Image 1 (cartoon, rainbow, N blue to C red):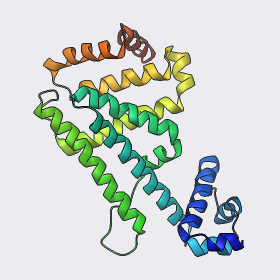
Image 2 (image 1 turned 45 degrees about the vertical axis):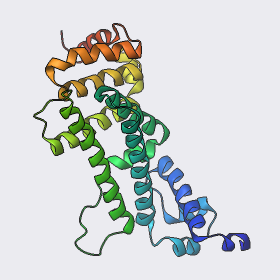
Image 3 (image 1 turned 135 degrees about the vertical axis):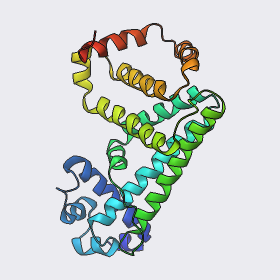
Image 4 (image 1 turned 180 degrees about the vertical axis):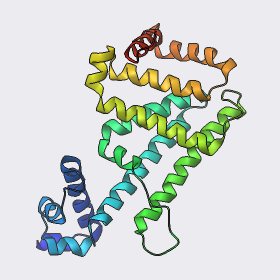
Length: 244
């Protein structure tokens, strides 16, 4: 314990947050108590409260960390490519990688975040989370406007509704693929990767300019080495949904 007292406050907070993150993944946030967190982190409950006022503060830090990681993934995708479709593919790939590496964080990003900062009843982490969320929106806005200016994306997109639908559809597809991977394989005969590729193609088709759609699709198939996989996936999904 003497050694621990000499460590910076930030180290203690990180130890506690790390232990809490594991517990939240295993038991859920509601079922995890401050006693549980203290025990897992190797602190007394009294010491735990020296570093955190309550469980909500710990959750707030985890949400903030998740938003920072998400921002990094999206930013990297936009920096690495110039072509609209290539950027889109990297955004999708980055989100999948993010969900697979940090499934708990990915779910937290989808939860409600505080946007009311008119009074003082909020955690500093909540305001920072909101700020980073707005920066993520700006990144997606840049992607959409850049694609529109290049003539790759529809010129009648309403930016803010498009951003929220874009994020909602992609995150929903990714979370569904993670939750229902076995069902998708058995009922549709699709791997998780195939299901994601088809879902991502549907989302892109909703924002791409109609006259540019086929040309861009052919280019993507050539780059990815795909042949007729999109046709196979479409038939399987249509069959599973009761289509022709």
